[in-house]
Structures are given as structure tokens and as C-alpha cells.
Length: 92
Ligand SMILES: [Zn+2]
Image 1: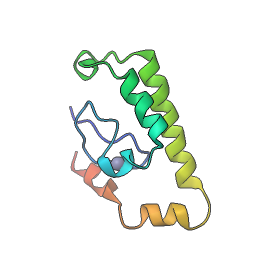
Image 2: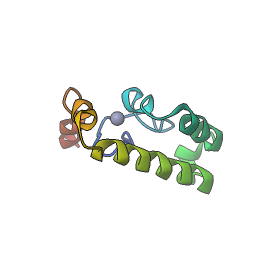
Image 3: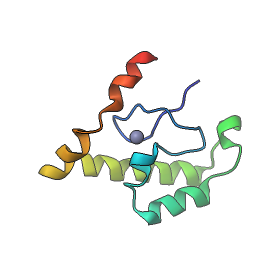
Image 4: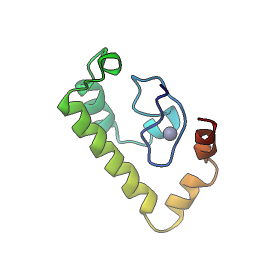
């Protein structure tokens, strides 16, 4: 089973313990990244039972990502233009 970046619209494969690809991971505020790691339980990707704290902060990160993407103006466009790995998802 493949695990892909949690960034909405990004289909890049990442190690299961990673929230997303490096490109998108570093778009998250450090605060969120810290909280994701704080909630991460080693082995959760094997047991498939991440803590509710992890799920909550992962959802929060996804909301943050969506808010960034729908932001009108150049920010969203600049974000999606040079990096559109969504096509990779068609391989699966
Ligand atoms: Zn990504």
C-alpha cells in the first residue's frame, strides 16, 4: 500500500511516517510540524492506529494547506504551477 503526501492534490509518495513530501512539509508552519512530530507514535504506520492527537493535528495541517491553496492571488498559483506531481498518482 502506498502512502502519499497529505497535501491536498499532491500525490507524491512519501515514507509512511512522514506527513508529506519535503516540499509541502516545509510549507507548514514550524508550530504545526512540531505538533505533528509530538503526536506521532513510532510504528503507527504499521499498526494503522495513529493517536487521535495525531489525526487531529494532521487534519489541522490539511486545513492549513487548503487555506493556502484557495487563497486568491499569486500565492496559490505560484504554488501549483511549478510543482504538479498529481500526475504521478495516475500510476497507481
Ligand atoms: Zn506534497
